[in-house]
Amino acid sequence: MAEEIKAGAVPAHVAIIMDGNGRWAKKKGMPRTFGHKQGCKVVEQTVEDAARLGIRYLTVYAFSTENWKRSEEEVGALMQLFRYYMVRLLQVAVKNNVRVRMIGDRRRFPADIIAGIDRLEQETKDATGMTFVIAVNYGGRDEIRRAAIRYGEDIRAGKAQAGESLTEQDFSAYLDTAGMPDPDLLIRTSGELRLSNFLLWQCAYSEIVITDVLWPDFNKEELLKAIDIYNHRNRRYGGV
Ligand code: IPE
Ligand code: IPE
Ligand code: MG
Image (cartoon, rainbow, N blue to C red; front, top):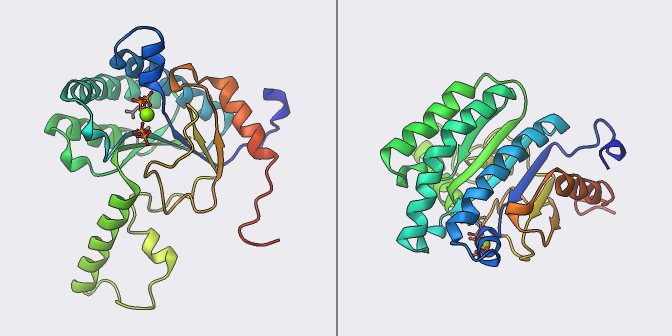
């Protein structure tokens, strides 16, 4: 499969809704958190695979604004995993010349996690390879809401003009993804046919590939399959 994907034929921006950790663990008779742990390992591997394939941006959905609804135990376990994997991720990022960026509202996290996120971004900001974007406490609607607030603040500060002159491009600059291209390919694992509040603005014309594979079983072969499907799609953007 790798040989079939010729140089330059990889999408510039791949976004992934990493779903199915809980079901994967349940199938094995294990607690849901076991699935999250395995899911983290797969994230690390996917970052390396994507960087080597020449993908410029990889964005993954790690924790949604709705995921706080889960049990205290599960949310707590996820926070512990963030703590542990942020340190590992820094090593993976440095080794692979990857720049890390977090989107979502980090203010809701404990202080040490916010500090860890800031550090990851700071220490990788000059990397020239792939940009790896992690969506944490991220919701598409919340992102658009926060962008609208910032736009309002700029108007009041005299830094932006109110009214019809605001273009879609201008508004994009207020989103967490400012400066990034929109995803070309959106992959969702574990078969669910919905966006679950992920990148609502940015996925307007993304090609969607859904696989039944559960996230902890995702691997390079699955990534290449999704890219191959993408390469056979006809993107029309409303044209003919
Ligand atoms: C995705 O797996 C990871 C997060 C949302 C944090 P899930 O935890 O949603 O796993 P399922 O969908 O219940 O199997
Ligand atoms: C989406 O998965 C969020 C993440 C992958 C982080 P969910 O498991 O939360 O989505 P729903 O509840 O099935 O829509
Ligand atoms: Mg799920």
